[in-house]
Structure formats: C-alpha cells, structure tokens
Image (cartoon, rainbow, N blue to C red; front, side, top):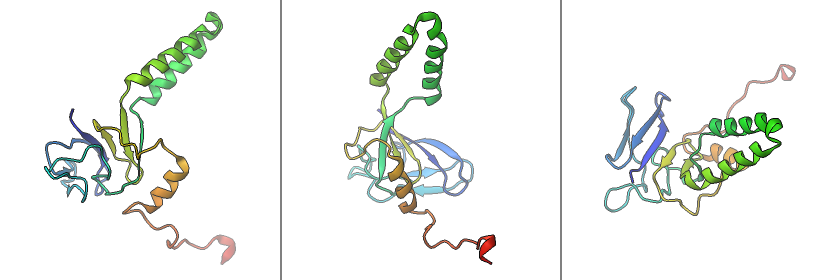
Length: 162
C-alpha cells in the first residue's frame, strides 16, 4: 500500500497531495518550494516510518486519527433518511443508520497533524493517536512549530484604552 500525504505548502499555502514512498522531500509545483522530510520521520532504510509518529511537514508529534469519510456525503445520507421518514414511518432512518454503521467498518483510518493539518493515508493506525479533541487541538495549534506565539504577540490597544 502506498503512503501519501495531503499538505499545504508553507511558502504559498496551496494544498497538494504527494506520494511519500517515491522521494525524501516535499515539493510544491506551484512555487517550487522544496523541503526535506523532518528529522525522525525516515526509518533506517530511508523510507517513511510506518505507523507515522511525527509529521513530515512540520515535525510535530501531536496527531489524531479519524475515518476517511466525506462528511458532506454522510450529511446527505442523514438528510435523505429524514426527508423520507414521514412516508416510511421512520424506517428510512433505520436504513440510513445501518448504511452508516456498515460504512464505518469499510472506510480506512487516516492520521491528521494537529500542527499543520497534514493528512496521512495508507499508514497503519498508531495507538498513540486518539480521536480528535477540540480542546487539545486549540492548545496544540498554539504549541506547533512555526505558529505565532499568541501570549507574546502585541495587540493594538482597544478604543477605550487610549
């Protein structure tokens, strides 16, 4: 199985998708930015470590796992079940629930970096990576490498402070 990442170029902010098995660097076709994988992401054979432990883009070790399912499609399934429920006496909701439950087992897991939102596909699930936690995401986003330090940033004075 091939390993891939969806990442955002740190120079031009364009999103890209790239296979990780073929190279030892990330390259942006938009601006030409080239960045080697961060330290600790390559194994002794020169391949990306599986399961992924550190982000190859920003080097951050805080990641979470989630199902690789299109949320808009999931919402559409629920809406269709709800719209049809008056004529099906609620059975359409049960069918949609069964469809959702069935899809849950067939959709693979992905790993997402809290720091740069890099999405890793094709890797084994790392037991250290739990489900997404919004409170941790806010804290980790501030701690991530390359993020502005919000505690020391200078803010303009409010209108009533001058």
